[in-house]
Length: 340
Image 1 (cartoon, rainbow, N blue to C red):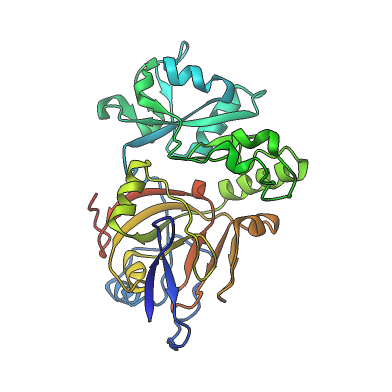
Image 2: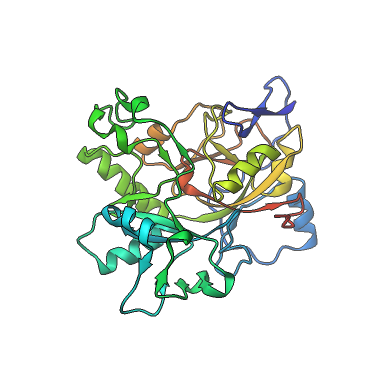
């Protein structure tokens, strides 16, 4: 049977009982492409979970700039200035607006173009700005002084420094006791050399791996993918501004599991739940149909950013291992109609 298993972090992941033989669909292509309008027959075929291809996120999509929750955009600033900006707000002198972006890495890139000597920055979240005062599609908050009440660091879960006191770098294994206070801030988008900081380790090989990873994410595809969870978890994700953390287990290890459509997501779950439509940066996928336990660190070392495979199902799934690659856009029904 297909079943849904709630892991210890209240996320729902797919599990599969291997004693049941499933009729396998034709192997889906690993690379998504822009498709022409879907005809009725093609829609029916997709609804049956066969020949299903994930859709790329396009700027013209109605949900391209939408967030699940009150997050609206991102604003990159030098890390050392972040506390002051969170307290006093963000002011501009030359421009007539505050810059912003719906993609945190893009806000970092724009800031770095003007401040080339800054290698350590954070992408702060802009939230609850009146709709008449923000134009995310064109990267503008229509004010010269963004009040601090509209800015936050994005942290939605913290772990104490004591939890990391003797924990080594998850990538290279180097001891990092002196950087324990820089870890455990889940939701903080900090960038070193324009690359999302997976670990504060200053080992040159670790930094290089993170820089290479960001380049893959920036140049790779951003796809519309679907995740199913329970009502309580969906509400927590919404309060976190559309961010989620990976589960504790699953057919491909502890990750965030995505179906290729809302119906595909429901097909893989025994129990119905809340379907979340997400913008997902897949970078360089590792194509693997077998049920194998993967981890973020192992994929990073081998220069992959997610897993793409059937892992016991008749259609393929994407499994993501880091929250920064996922942004929830909306809650939808099985027909992809927006509910919230």
